[in-house]
Image (cartoon, rainbow, N blue to C red; front, side, top):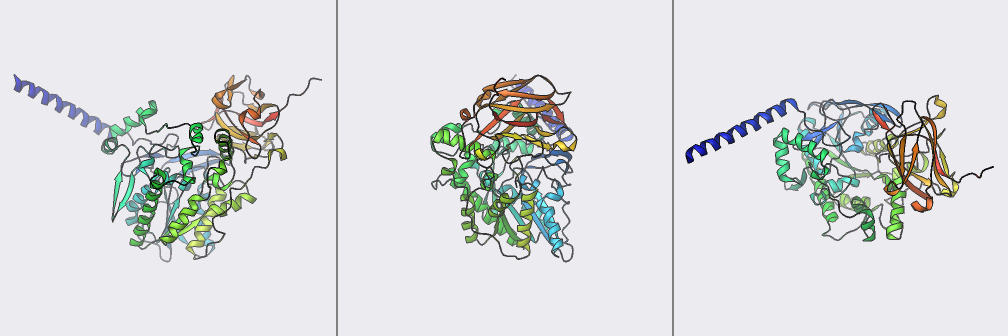
Length: 548
């Protein structure tokens, strides 16, 4: 009897195992690797690297400058396909490694720093093959693994590592996994520690990582489960921004990058991880006979006062009793890296000063989502070209402060009019693209259902004027302020005006005299598959006119 039960149990387990194997085989046959980053359909799971670009991906992206073609090559990178091992006679081969800053989703390919570098080198009589091996949300450890994967085929003469401390330091340390809002891929990210000639790889959730790497079915089901139940992801809820500020911390965890800490603090550990990885990069490049340049890219807030700077400054004043600039040191990452890389004799070029200088005299060098725009990419290309051609680094040591592009509020009109000027400086996220009135089409800013802006503080109510097409869904509910505490309705298509009875002083005022404003509105229509909230003509604080 017992033998019969054992046989039945064995048969049941065997049948279950066979069913799992068949399900896994079907998953590998029918299902693509899961898309790992919400909102970025061109990124998929990679068992060794965490994520990679989708091979031969094609799409059109609507940007503030118009619609651009976005394409990835057969290896999942922007730019020309990777070549074979033989280099063209007389040409250097330059390989860039980076993250979303080099992917440049909102830029046409000719505007990328890699494309601009190729053109600049031709103009200066020093043509080279330039390749862009970059994937969004990569850390230095993942870039090192990527170098090891492709170096035998690519055999570069020069390697440019685009280091963005704004999230790379967090991406490099498992101690910070899930703690920051700037590292969405921490659940699947391989954390790399150099150990002699080898690389030790760890994952934040080892058991799930093993399953993910060995089972397509598990990887797909895990992603779908996280989409339904976000708590299954890797997210540290921690203290609120107000609580952090009252405790003397930075408003958000990722801004601890700009503060000093004790040696045992998790951010000091993270810095040491990044430094170890930079040493390993140098050793790998020396081993393959390639020069290494570390190109350090600052955050937008380090370069220029943005909507985010205003919003953080107001919160810091409200909850900590002093200005944001008294809490953080915007030059700290560059100064620390300058000392370390100099001591290690690793060639380095910093973009902080050149970008600040550009911000004084030109339009914003960053896009609305905080990445480098075409101007920033051109500056980076020029800096790298100078390095490749042996030109000395120009500019002063790391010093100064973010450029103040926002004029004092009392020196500007309280209502922003987008009729003939995009007035881009005070805009935060959610402002998709702008058209001037003279173009003969609906004019103003097309915004996402959520948008942010810094407005001059002035007396009166918040007034927003705009336009909706005839096929827009109305009524649309507009929610403004913290906790969506103020509401207004747009009840008809065509021109509209809404007045929200919220005082600027109730929102808090920054050192420049601005308030930060965030609103949400129902999706009213779509434009090239983009969800649109409003088309905005004017916005500002206005006093009610007295009745005649």
